[in-house]
Image (cartoon, rainbow, N blue to C red):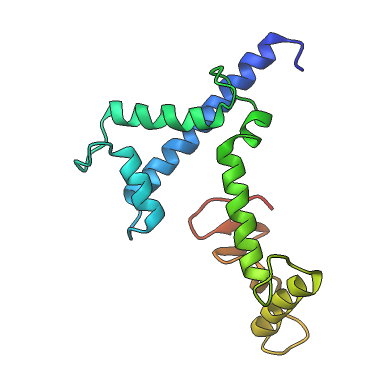
Length: 163
């Protein structure tokens, strides 16, 4: 627990600012994204409540309220890192990520991934990238959409992912 209420207030303000920036970025990205995928369309449907092709201030506020409510598990109007990490939204994201991981690495329709399964998929990738060679360039092993540039890892979208 924090003993100084100023830290709680400053922390809450910082979290709210970060959340607002993230949500605004997501909304901007959705508005400017080229192709309409299912996730983009779902976001647009949520933002544009009356489906008139425009997002009013009231529609945006309603969407923000819903987003914050999904993070605010106890409904007290304040979130901290622990509450966000334990929110239904975070748990759903973690569950979807875990399911994608199992689908990618599990063999033979199994619902479990062995160390051998995990290594086999990655070593197949290494062999494919290296065309059978025993070594490959470091950059070739970076995740899709990332490149190594002068000591800094950057995504194609211009952001700097965390290492």
